[in-house]
Image (tube, rainbow, N blue to C red; front, side, top):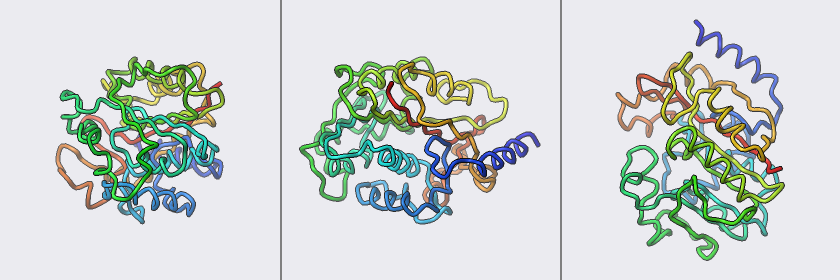
Length: 290
C-alpha cells in the first residue's frame, strides 16, 4: 500500500504543478502537448532509432522523452539560437547532435567512442560505436550540417575544454555510468565549469522508484539524486524545483521487466523499467550557471 499511497500523493502534487514543468520524471503527459510533440516529430527525422518515437502514450518511450524534453527545454529557456555553441557529454550518436547542427553555430559531442569496455556494454555503451567517428552520417537518416559537428573521444569526468566555453551542455542517461555516484558529481562540476555564466546545463539520469531501496552502484535514489546531481555543482542552480510526480499507475504496474521480456520495449510503452531488484525511470533537471 505504501507504493500506491506515494503514487496518489504524487498525483496531488502533479495537479498543482505549473503549466510548463521542465524538471521532472519521465512524463507521458508530454505527448498531449502540441509544441512538445512538434519537437518530437522533427527529432525523429534525425534518428535511426525509430522505436524511441511514438505518436501516442501507448508506445511512449523513455529515451525518446529524454531527447525531446531536453531540446524542448533548451528552446523554452532560449538556449537554442544561431550563435550558440553546445556540448553533449556521453552523447554517443544521439539524434540531438544532428538536430542541433541545423540550428546553432557549433555542436560538440563526447563519449568513450570505441572503448571496448564501454562500447561493448549492452546498456548504454552500444551508442558509442567507434563507427560514428568514421562516418557520422550513417547514424542520421537525413542531411545535416556536418561541418558544425565535432565528435571527440573523452572521459565525461575530465572534460578537456577551457572554462566557460559553451552556451549549453547536456548529458542524458550517461553520468550514472561514469564510475559511481561520486564520479557523477565530478561530471556535474566539469559540465558546470565549461558552461558560460548564464548558460544552461541539462542532465538526465536513472531515478530508482522502488520504496526503501538499497543503494545501487550506478542509479540514484531521490536522496542520492539530490546530493550528487541537483546539488552536485555549487555554480549550477536548478531553473525550477524538481517535480517528483510518478508516471501514471498504468506504467508503474506494467514496467518493462528487463530480466524476462527481451525486446518487448519495441512493441509497447517503455517508461518504467524493472530488473527484479530495482524499478526506475528517468529524471531530468535543467540548471542555469551562476
